[in-house]
Image (cartoon, rainbow, N blue to C red; front, side, top):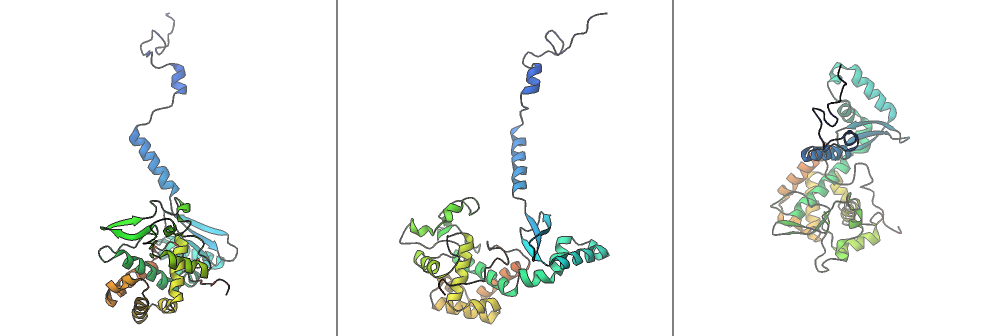
Amino acid sequence: MSEYKNPFEPGGKFYNPRITDASRVTEPRIMPRWAEERQEERQEEQEHKTKTKFYDKDSGMLLEEFDDSPNICYAIDKNEYNELKEKRNNSYAGKLVPLLIFITINSKTIRELILSKAEANVRAFLTTIRQTERGRSVLTPLPYNSYNGTTNGKLNLFTEKTYAEAPLDYAEHPGKYKNPKNTAAGAYQFLLKTWNNYKDSYVGLDDFSPFSQDKAAVCMLYDNHVLDRVKIGSPEEIKKVKQILSDKKQWTSFDAFSDDEMQKLFNKNKMLEDNYLSIIYTPFDFGLLEVKRKNG
């Protein structure tokens, strides 16, 4: 009987001098580039996965979270939350509706505390401002990193990065270190002089972040005595707000839009807000409507 020889060892049928036992164990497996790219995409998708979270409005305890849903945090009464879960699970029709949607639609707490009619109207109007500042040809709202609108149809930016990517780029109004003759910046195109006035006068404008820009726009509405009209949001009030701000040379881009055009933009944006599809950076129920002057 002949002695057994490992076919993978030298002299064996399957011996390959380029592959040794040691290399089989220690050398990492080479992954095709397309597979690496797909793996990177999956990792990025996981990192940016959005969740909807429900918190107890009294204790702040996390009650539940849902993957692949709008990135919103809700404050809700714990007892109401549990009652709605039970009601949905005990209802045949309710079982056909995702729990997230069922609770969001039926919660009295959420409807009253998270998205009041007043806040929805103000948020819709802020989006309308951003659209008119972008111009008639493109009604996509101006981004928070814009600077001096557009040039030949192309957006001018004071940074290529978002606030999440580079918060230091939003540390202060960019007009402080860019072209001093043209300083309109941000989603609402605040001039440096105007920005500094509001920063010195109102609480919560410590940087040029999207949060501060949204807050400053609300302060500007308040300062021009139209915030309460925007909160009401009726066609008559929106028309009056447009007239007042145009007369005061605030957001002069309004002049390029008729009252009907302005109302149509506002109505579309209000519908988005009502369906929790806001593009305003400041989250719902995050103190957007709270306006407080310094030293007073």
